[in-house]
Image 1 (spheres, one colour):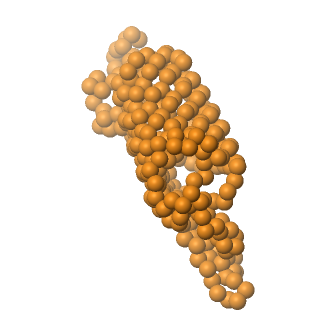
Image 2 (cartoon, rainbow, N blue to C red):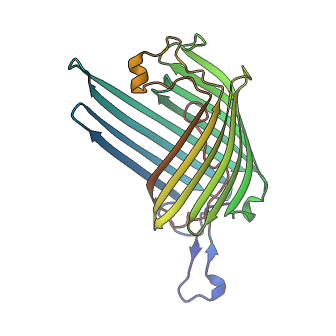
Image 3 (tube, rainbow, N blue to C red):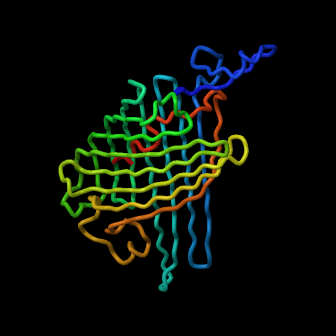
Length: 301
C-alpha cells in the first residue's frame, strides 16, 4: 500500500484476522497517523587563543494516507568562532543559518503524483539574508506505488519561482531578485530490515538564464540501532554553474580565513554522520515514497 499502515493483531483472532493493514478511520490512533522526528547536536572545542561552538537542530512532522502526503521540515544551526590575534585583539564570527519546507502531495494515479512545494531560508555563507520559493511538482514512479512500498525508482520535475534577498550586492549587480527555476530528479530507494538507502541525481536550472545550472549526486544510508534510534550517513557531490549569490565586493583576507562566505567554485562535496530519534504513531511504519526529500528552503534546497 502507498499509505502509512500498520499491523493489528486482535486477541483471540484467527490467522486471517492478524497482520491487517489499516488506514485512517480503521483504528483509534492517538497520533492520528502523524510521525515526528527531532534531532540535536552540540560541539565545543578550544585552546588558549581560539575557541568555537556549534549548535544545530531539526524538527520534522509528516502524515501520510493512501491519497495524501504532508510534511513540514525545519532545520537550523548556529556557530561562533573566537580567535585572538597577534596584537591581542579578538575577533568573533557568528553565523545563523536555517531553512524550512512544506510539502503537500496527492496521488492522482498508480504511477503519478502531483505536489505543491514551498519553503524559506537564510544562509550567511551564501550571502542570503532571506529566500523563499514555491513550485508545482509532478512525479512518475516506474513501479506502481502500491506494489513497491519497500523500493522505488522515481523521476520528478519541479517548476516555480524563487525569491532572493542578498546581504551584499552580487556579481550580477542584484540586491534582491525573483527568478523562475526548474528542477529534475531521478531517485532509487530501498527499505530493508536493517534500515534504508537512497541514491539520487538532481539537476537545477534558472529559466531566465539557461547557462546557470547545477547537477548533484547524493547517497543516504540509515541504519537502525534500536527501536526509534537511527545512525544516519550521507554523502553528496555537486557540479556548480549557478552561484548567483557571489558578492560583487569580493572577500577580505579575514573573511576567507574565517570561511564566512562561500567562494566561487565549480564543484563541492559533503559527508556527514549523525543520530536521530523517531517517535509517534505505531501505524506509520510503511514508507510512502512519493516526493521523498528535497523541498523548500529558498531555492528548491
